[in-house]
Every structure is written in structure tokens, then in C-alpha cells.
Length: 213
Image (cartoon, rainbow, N blue to C red):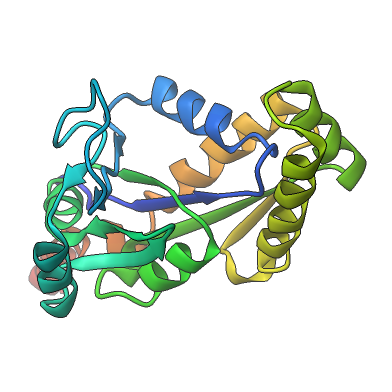
């Protein structure tokens, strides 16, 4: 059998539900999984490198890519545009590499409706409780009470779209959730559409069958 097609793995969650940790563990488990590098119209910050943290584009160049259908998803956030370029992702999946997206429900919806939709695997992480979600945000020690309140409201907005995803995992135990995540990825890699050589293999079986009958 030949190589498979890659997956577009979308991992979404409210802030504090463990998405970043699980994304890192997934890539530690299989370092062939590429992380999607977003494009943005904001200026690079000190130390940022074009093509590593972001693809830095002018606003006209960004809008031209959107108009040409070359952005899988895009959004306008705090005065700047952000998006996921289609070219590198399409090249990756055609060569059998999975691409991981850390995006919100709106971006996930756009990608799930894109030309690459047949190869999308979307997973949403839920916290075990709202109280635990708040505890995790507070334990970071980075935000004041007003900021945490805003994050909690945004988190609920994210949670309300849980049913738009292929799989939903309650992250009540990080190691157990990691195991379930790996199982989902492993199984989805075996979907018929991810195996382009299956048709030729079945045709060969048919020819062999006809030769024997």
C-alpha cells in the first residue's frame, strides 16, 4: 500500500481547557505533524521571524489571497487580519503530512466548509466543570479579576459551539485525554478517503479474481 493523505487536525477549546498542552503532546508523539503557521497583517514583534511565528503580509496582499480563495479561514481581530494560507496545508496533506490547527470555532467552521473539508478532523475539548475552568485561569496568576471574567465569557461562547465538531472530549484527566486524542487521530488516518491507493488495490483484486474465474 502507498502513502496516505494527510489530515487537517483542528483542535479547539475554551481558554484553560488544556488545548495548548495537548497540542504539544500530540506533536511530541508524532513529530511529523506540522503546525499551521498563520498569516497576519500586524507588524512583526522583536524576535519574530517571517514564516516561523507568522507569515507577515501587507493588508492588500492578505485581501488578495482571501479574494483568490487562498485562505482556508480568516478573521479580523483588534485591527489586524489573521488567516490560514491554503497552499502550504494542501501541499502537506498531498504528501501525507498532518497539519495541526489551534483555532477557534469560527475558524474551524470556515475550514470545515473549505475545499479541503474531506480531510478535516475537528476535535473540541471541554473542561470537567465551569468551576475547574475558572480555577485553571486563576492559577496562571497572569490576569486580574476583570480579565478573567472576560475570558470566562469568551470561554462560554466557545463551549456553546461544541456540537459543530467531529469529536468532543471532556478533559478531566490530561493523560487519559491524550490517549483518546491519539486513538482518534490514528483511526481517522485510516479513513478510506485518506488512502488514495485503495482504489488501485481493489482493481488489482478484481483483476486477480476474474483471472481465477
